[in-house]
Length: 119
Image (cartoon, rainbow, N blue to C red; front, side, top):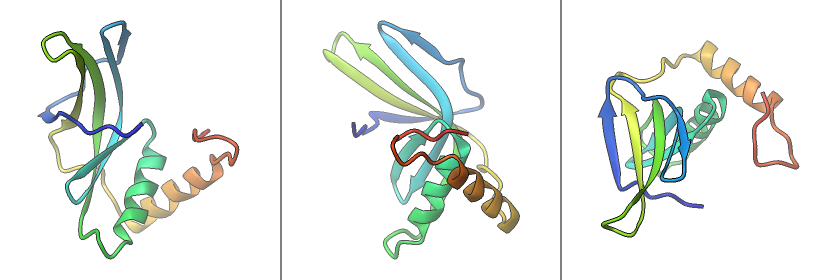
């Protein structure tokens, strides 16, 4: 399912995750490639996605931040509204050593029969 966020909100800290009939919120990490946001539950998958995306000639910049994705039903609109909460900071520290460690951990957790990453 492709999610186009209705809004991206900067925040100082993330709220607790919740699963209720009218609201789903999960904490994790978000990657921004140019102006498109992608949410991941795990740092390793988010980092690897962002790093690989940045290798495309079409992507000049990328950001990696702590984030929460939220879907809530809006009675007025009659549909789910999707919000990405992004922690207002400089993002996750990136360097060559971190790069190798996160990509290795991601590769070690890949299961070819599943779309999920297994740490």
